[in-house]
Every structure is written in C-alpha cells, then in structure tokens.
Image (cartoon, rainbow, N blue to C red; front, side):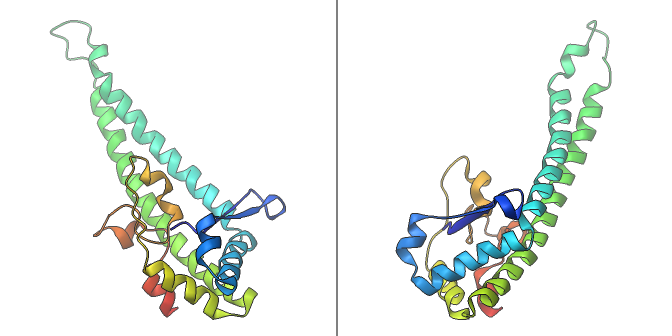
Length: 187
C-alpha cells in the first residue's frame, strides 16, 4: 500500500501527498504519524539524496544499455563475408557485464541507504508527533494488507510500497527500499 509521497528539490518547494486509501483507512493519530514520517524525509534531506542515487543508478544503467546496443549492432560492422569484423561485440559484452554488476551493487546500496533513512524518518515522526502509537497502528494495518502489484511496470513503482510489491520472496529484504514491517514494529 502506498501511503503518501514527499517530493521536491529543496524544503522550500517540497510537497506531501497522501492517497485516498490513507485517508479512508487511518485514524487521526496514524495519519499524523504518516505525515510526520513524510515531513522528516523533507527535513532530513532525503529528497536530494534520492535524486543523487537515481542519477548514479541511471548512469550505470546507461553503461549497460550502451553495451547492449553494441552487442545488437555487431553484425553491421562486418565488411566482407570472411571478415570477422571489429571486436565490437566483445566490448559490448564487457560494458553489459560492468553495467549489470554496477546495477546490482547500486540497488543494494540504494536499499541499504533507504533502510537507514526510513528508520530515521520513523524515529523523527515519533519525535514530531510525540505519539509512537500512531506509526505502530499504521505498521500493524500494513501487515494485514497485500501490497503485490500485477503489472509489467511494477518495478518502477515498487520503491513506494512498504510491503513486497514484486513477489520477490527470496530477494525481498535485500532489494526492498523500506525495512520489513516486523523490524519497524520492533524499532
């Protein structure tokens, strides 16, 4: 379930949005906890950090895509039938390998950083609202809901979900942006 969103480049132009489901399913204390959590992402500079991580991730993706492009056009560089062509395919494979490993490492780093920022946002929300029961209630409700997405574009929105949106049972905790709800409740 997506509860809300904090976005913007600086705290001066930041916005917080919540979904209709959040307004319908949460009581006042829980809603204050969610807003406090989102506000702490703005206050702690998480938006700028996420933009930097996204830029790094897309730069690494570009390396992979360049290698894939070179791999696909390898036959266009052959001049004659007997000519083996330039070793462009080998260079493409190397770029794909570097980019693939980089993407894997980038996702792991992004998940680790995001886990810590989510814990900080939870703690800050409790500090702002002075009511730990609000977030605890939210986490308890989220545990009872199903967050799985059945869509070809599910990967693009999966970072906004508290639960496992992608059915990645084994990889769920390794690549998830938010810490597991059980950890959040214990925290």
